[in-house]
Length: 173
Image (cartoon, rainbow, N blue to C red; front, side, top):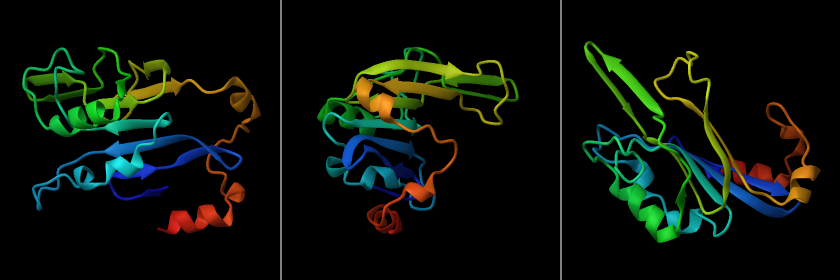
């Protein structure tokens, strides 16, 4: 579908049919403009009924997805999208973000997996391994038709050779 600095939106396809839209989001405040560019996107046309997963760093704090949250911050956007689009929160109660500064240490759930498909699996990988980030690596799976799953080709890395001319044109936009 497209990309900008904060959002990457690929469609996972089987032949010419769109199977699932995966939206990788990094919602960060632009300190110069004092706003969040991702909030300005036209989400009505981006989220597809029955086939969308939004996953990433939303930098939003709420008791709705983090039972340990003590101060809600920047959560209205996420709550509105969840309610308006009927999305499910795939996370469990495990902290996805951990930071330590001097004597202060915090854990929170700001990395979310939101979907309008059934989540079959959600977990945090490498719980005790250093990743170089203050965010945990998450893995999730959504339900797909078993035949579709069986027909997929396993590709490690990018498979640019399989891109059609239409895919290339869309990627340029």
